[in-house]
Structures are given as C-alpha cells and as structure tokens.
Image (tube, rainbow, N blue to C red; front, side, top):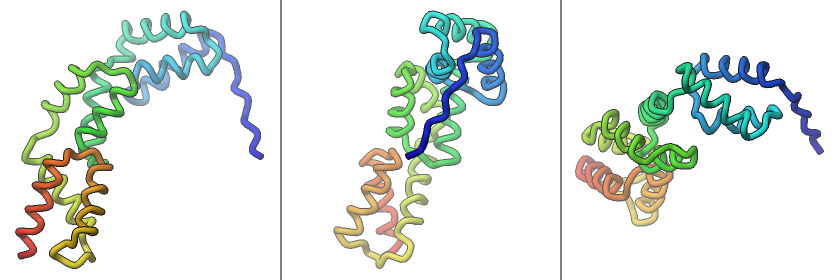
Length: 164
C-alpha cells in the first residue's frame, strides 16, 4: 500500500547534532531522544552515551521536561491528573517527580473549575437536569480526559445545582 521511507543511517556526530537541535527547539524527554537516536542507526550504548552527554550539557533535563509537560497538558489541553501521570509514566519518568510537579502546577480549586468548565461545554445542548444516560456519557468524557471520578462527581453536582 504505502511504502515506508527508508531512514538514513546517521553517524554519531550527525545524530548528536540533530538531537541537540531537537532539544534546542523545545523540551524533550530523555527516553524519547534515546529511541530517536536508535532509529537513526546508533547502538544502544551509543544512544545511552549521547543522552548522558546531552543531559550533562543541559540540553536534556528530565525535571524541566516534566514541568513543561504538566503545565502544557493541563493549561492548554485541559488534561486531568490521571492522564498526565499515565503518559509520563509510560515515558519512564519517576513517580516522585511527576507528583512534585503536579502539586506545584495544579491548584485544587482551579482543577475543579477546569473540570466543571470542560463538562459545561459538553452538556451544552443537552436537556438539564441530565438523565442517567447523558450523565454517564459526560462522566466517560471527563474520565477520558484524565479527571478523577470524585472531581467529576463534584463538577456534575455543581452543574446540577446551577441548572436548578
């Protein structure tokens, strides 16, 4: 069907320059860079050496990456804590670093307000009060965005009170 384009094998220096360029454009996850340089034809040992060098030279910083990731996903894409933490765990980020940044960036009151406004946008056009099927649909929507069930329930009850 579609032919995959062959990737050009890079030398260590070419891969280092390209990885440094990527890191200069924006925060990168060390595990993502590790995988990328292996795709460019470097061995596992060379990839590990390169990630170590980029970290030492401050091109890569896991804490800086986690801070930027949590801030961007929460602020701009309105992801909940569960989805953010899951995504970072899949990238091999330390749980303590994730928790620390979430506590620092996500204000609990603002978090509930974000969930409430997300749900409010979803229920526009639905007849209030919500029926059981609509309530379940909205609950699944917010859960897919990564919000905890307790926060979703609070937001739904706030919306129900406003509609009365």
